[in-house]
Image 1 (tube, rainbow, N blue to C red):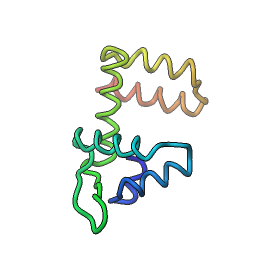
Image 2 (tube, helix red, strand yellow):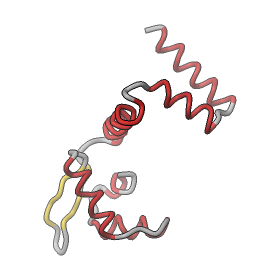
Image 3 (tube, rainbow, N blue to C red):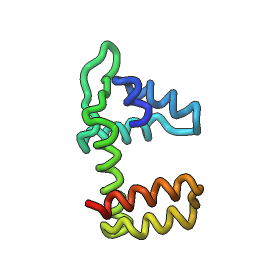
Image 4 (spheres, helix red, strand yellow):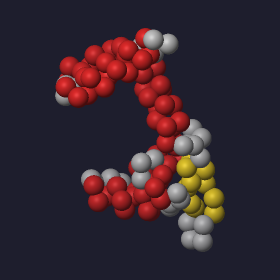
Length: 111
């Protein structure tokens, strides 16, 4: 999804070549993932000149929200707290990130 949003439309080969520049990956893996993203409603397919074109259907923030919610539900039984604790302990936060997080928590608490 991160690759296709800036492109607006792409073939499986377009995505495969960009991913392959970053790491080894099989063409069929990319094709499978594009089909899954289409089935979930994140992409739609239309006929191109030589190959199917995939287009993003939903804005980036909506897809990220959906994927994070799905991940939290599947891995953490719907609770975000264990994920946040893990991220803070494993990844650590800079002072700036801590202040930004505290500001966000304070704003949410005021609602």
